[in-house]
Length: 436
Ligand code: GLY
Ligand code: MN
Ligand code: MN
Image 1 (spheres, rainbow, N blue to C red):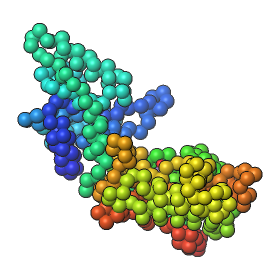
Image 2 (image 1 turned 30 degrees about the vertical axis):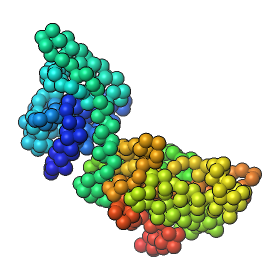
Image 3 (image 1 turned 90 degrees about the vertical axis):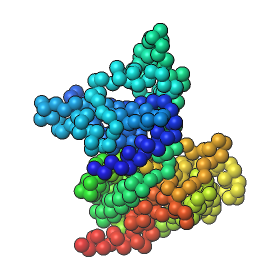
Image 4 (image 1 turned 135 degrees about the vertical axis):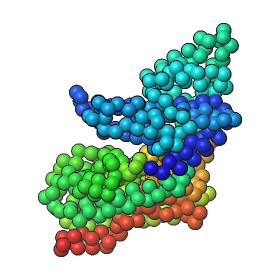
């Protein structure tokens, strides 16, 4: 394990803190049913700073003249390791993960009270876990109880996640490499699902193709529950049943990405079950693709987070008029937000360790300016539910096209470029997959 990116991030956080003590616990384990647990995943902030994969661990950072990073973790345990696997233990963790000190997690409360005494500030994110809030309050009270011995508790509490959110918004080289790889794997998974699609198969069979491809290339999990939505299901934005038999003539919308070593990918492609788009399907599809091209062209340093959305909405509004989904002028449709009937979500979100990643979208009152190293999705769509006032040919067509973009000095790099999205490219891939 190369711990240098994690050590560097801890150092940067310590510099930003300036003074005080930060407490960053990892995620708890969660029971799924009876004695079976959900697969364990570390807390995203904790992962960003440590790379340490075990539960029951807490990072404590002491800023100031002699900055230190300290890990509290489980001790080694021969019996438990037979059942549940290897534990680094405090000594192993110090060396492998590059901490200045490590201690058994059972000693946390006592040691933390000592570390907090006479410090000006506590850096902790309140409100995410009631048990941790109570534990931290109790530790602060333990320090306050020593006031007659001359010990002072921190007078200030800062939200450490707010500082970390800013750091996580601009990815470092280690993160970009993982995001690139996660994106390439996810693109391969979409190609595989397109190749396997056919009328008569079930949505879950295509989901299985995605999972197969994620896992065989090392992704530990899907980055979020995969959406495989055929026909009218494509108009349900968070459809995850994936249970329907796919019919001839339907479009299939797949929104799926893998998570690799803690980093997400997030791709949507929409393609015909039988390998050929119908005329009306192609009309909506090409409109969404044009909107996406406009959005991608709007991503560059100095543009704002909303620039791609505004570019996409302009194209979609014109297209909705041309296809007789809406009446009126582009400006009028944008002003009245009438387009939201067919395009009701935003064109993107930050992406990184979390698929909807950390980071504020506004700086003060203004939408945030893009800077190199930010990663965001570009995902316009158009979803037409049956209604007497829209042409029947478009009923139940739902299209979304989603890519992941890294902001660069020159504009952006599309990390998910290997998933085909031009109609001709998709139809060729599907035709060739059937011949094999
Ligand atoms: N798959 C979640 C999203 O596209 O935001
Ligand atoms: Mn998505
Ligand atoms: Mn997305």
